[in-house]
Length: 512
Image 1 (cartoon, rainbow, N blue to C red):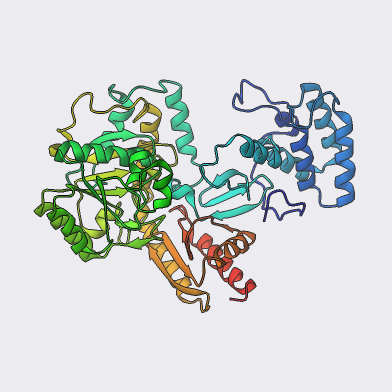
Image 2 (tube, one colour):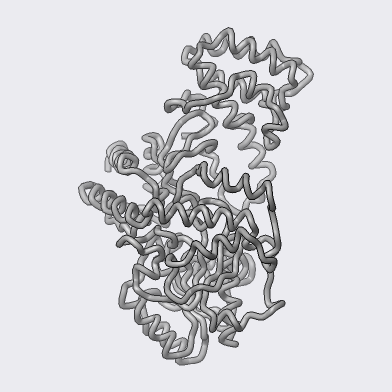
């Protein structure tokens, strides 16, 4: 479904809401400095949502347009006099439930869906496909709501960044408290927020990995793992893997296998990068014996490009031994797989735990901060001591806001026993998918809550995703003919059933 459709969408129950129409139409700028007043275009959109009868809807829209000062455009913020007149009109014409829902929708977005789409199309550098099929405005756990009041189970979780859910009241309070004290300090300055985190993180990481270099994004963390490894080995060669994906920054994309990501930037023939066959130890050993590299980087479970393809236990264990035998550094990119995402037993916070293999360096991130941008390079002292002052630096890495987020998020992960929940919901997905009998489904994998469903063709994928969305389950991730589902790890049993039923319905509707 498209947000620009003229069809009126189904909408979910509204939440308890404390603001009235006059509150949201004539905002107090001191209370909401991040907002502007609603636009007339958004008010008309909301009228179209809250009133079911077409004639009444159109009549009230006409009245609303007539009470505002005609000197302003439909996408200009309402003046206070216009807001007061509109609030009075809507208060007279809408019943209590309609008024409450209208106030909520205007609070969630003061801009119309069409304006938001147009602004993105006009100003966004097109480095990625613009997803404008819905405009998320609110979240709760594994559920998101769009600008029309429709709810969906979120199967993307922002590439595994929102494992703790799509909103977080505890995080909101903690960030407000920290922002009131100290917003930013450079990475090399000591600070209280980081010290708090360092006292909390122990026990979650593989044994021996206790030195941190904080970053802001996954690709940035991968870049820095390569620098740390090269500083230690004094060798520039790196072995990466076919099907691997490590991010979009210059170094990270250089070790990403898909040439389409590398070639536009002249990175398709780097003499320091050597691609080996995933799950093939011989191809790695050959490169190490030839002296081509002293660093090996991999995703233990290949996500974006590999379609959630796991390393075999033999490969992971053998790779660790090969690195030891040849004096090479093993880097595990756990940006997506970390913090409980791929647990098959309680207590497995990282894919490294799942495989019983400890890398020399890890890149961690995504859900590290509960959705707030914070990542890190993690290693042990023998390697980290080769990095000296001036080798690198970060203005925002590990800033007080990021460290507060990481502290709160890791505390929540442990308190919620998140790895146990992952194991339980993973089994629920596996049980449900195993009962689906359809020629369109060629197989599936549940690696914790990395769920991959292989369809009979890539052409079928967008149709299935659109139909699932119509049944309340939203996903935009796929690799070829493989659907990739990564819901927040706090997804409930009932929400898993919604996803499974949406998938079954989509298959039925496509005749599969």
